[in-house]
Length: 277
Length: 109
Image 1 (cartoon, helix red, strand yellow):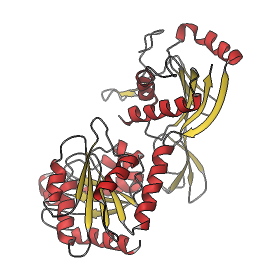
Image 2 (cartoon, rainbow over the protein chains, first blue to last red; image 1 turned 30 degrees about the vertical axis):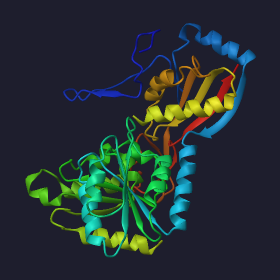
Image 3 (cartoon, each protein chain N blue to C red; image 1 turned 60 degrees about the vertical axis):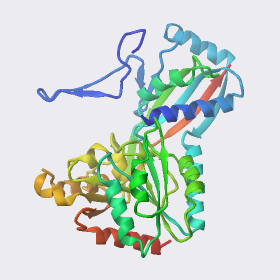
Image 4 (spheres, each protein chain N blue to C red; image 1 turned 90 degrees about the vertical axis):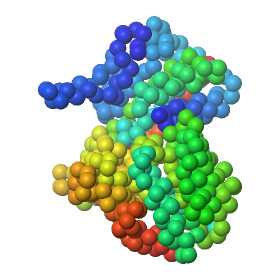
């Protein structure tokens, strides 16, 4: 909260009243909009002397132009990871979804079904526990668990460290199962060849519109748990339309890791991707 | 939630460039389509700067509006989310602004 005027700092949030249809934007006293639409917000730490300190700064201080990308360090390590994979002819995929979408089930089934054709090893990301890594390990493949603690996503440096432990063989596949979260993982390049978003039919068809960054960043979307369609209200066509609205190029697979329905097309995509390395 | 890690990155980058000098002001450019909440950055900034040369520094955030170019007709479209539809009916849009996440400048004493 701003100590000067007492208003809330959440200038980005809007409140929608569904009774009246009214949308309330929070207009902060200290937010200025320039003619080109750029919005400038000042922090309030020094508000009592706000203007005085700015004038003082102009007289005595040195301004250094940085123009530095905040994610540059992550992106550099991601580029190194990408080179590492390329040099070993390894396909790395970044699997992302909300918690409980069936990522681990899809992954164990995929590893099991393809074990004679494609060597798959896994980097498993979760905030806590090694439960998923344990399930993956039971398929007989190599797996490394990364626990992010308070972190809500994997970063390129974690993959770098994970790869040292995993030591995947040449000409193989590394599946990176990201932390269950439809927001943050979309922002961080890990050095993968493609991002894959997994959505289950129990989650609601409007997820692509609600979490557009994730669906925009992904090359393919795998709709899982289609065996449950008779029991849930999920409009498949709407979901596909929403996903294409956000990302016209996205490829979509409809599968059930329980019954095996639709898995062949996902395996086909995977094999083609390996073949193209 | 990713804003905490990003703010830690900002503090690390600025500290490195300040080379021990006291930082008075940090100017960021954040695109409105970048999935970064300026308010969350501000909230984290106070916490992350404790015990660093940035403590007490003014944080100025410039939010860059989203802009895309239609692949079909070439028109430029303002966006408030990372997708949209052109007046020609196309959804094939290339984002040209609004994804920035940059430290623009710093001011040291």
